Image 1 (tube, rainbow, N blue to C red):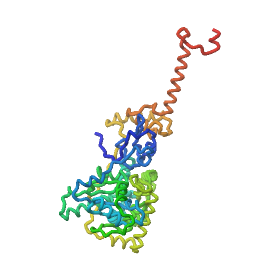
Image 2 (cartoon, rainbow, N blue to C red; image 1 turned 45 degrees about the vertical axis):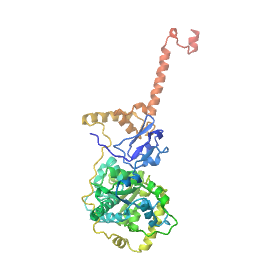
Image 3 (spheres, helix red, strand yellow; image 1 turned 90 degrees about the horizontal axis):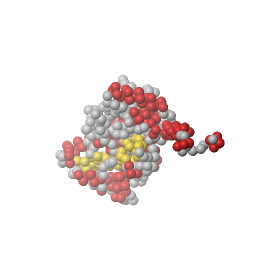
Image 4 (cartoon, rainbow, N blue to C red; image 1 turned 60 degrees about the vertical axis):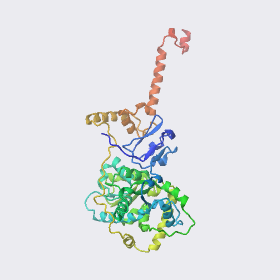
Length: 458
């Protein structure tokens, strides 16, 4: 039985021109072009959003929640991550951004940077106590990386650190706080994350790393940013907020850009990797046990970390500049060591621990030729035979990312060998030669054209 998957990334077929750009850049070979239009294979898509970023026709888009959804709940809590603040220059006070979120209709704000610090403390402790087992441990913060591991590197599942993401931890904590207050029933409370990428939205609908998410939905950073620009008074003095916002220190805020996670966790023997190609390459190296002397890998599918997400508004370099300046200003005011700063910032005794809340990832079968093993073996042999007949150039002109993918599609009846332009050209050439040879055999009596001087003499 084929498992069903929820995906935020969708295709607008009317805009697709079949240019195969998305086919070439998809890290899991999840896209094909058939009959002039792209199609997305659900079992392989990890919702990284790379196709959204690359598509020149904007035929790919992400399904996220709208602000109108909050009207369905009596009490709405928004969880802004550092990537949202990075959309604004540091001259815009964070209080102005918070007031803007209140003006948009949210009743409470819980800054994800606060939960990031508790998660960083868990990571630090886990890495220090980790004795036996393969190294390095891999961050669980990026759901697109987790899905990539499920699809392409299932052998690395055991190396993913069993710790909640900051957003999920924040949602669990704030939902419990509201429950303890007794003012609202759980079903009356909406908890919304501001997402920089479609993978975050997909993980709410179909979580791969948490047993029971308390997030209600996700609104894209770009959507919130546009609304905030409409209501924020940029030149105003920071307002006095009627309700305090629980936020973190500079170390929690620094999670927004690449390297912020390991910096907050104080891990020295760590590797920071960001970007689709780099993430894929490093995971490949880890699977070959090339990095056993590294304790921890902070890995993000987006270049620059969450600041480079496909659903953000500001240019990733501008956003990085904005956030780093904001973090620098915060750190100057703190004027303490990392341990002292975090100890002062983390003043909550009942923040949820990850234990018993995370779930073990399971491999996602990417290539299943047939449910029957015997039939699958025969198809595999046929696939190898077909593959040997293909040129091996992986040009993508056939609509598949590689020759191997085309061979797989052929044995599954989803493509034909003449979809390869080189095989098509050879077939056309052979057909043309055959037609010429046949023309030579047609008798003059039935209309064969005179084709040579010798025939004219006759």
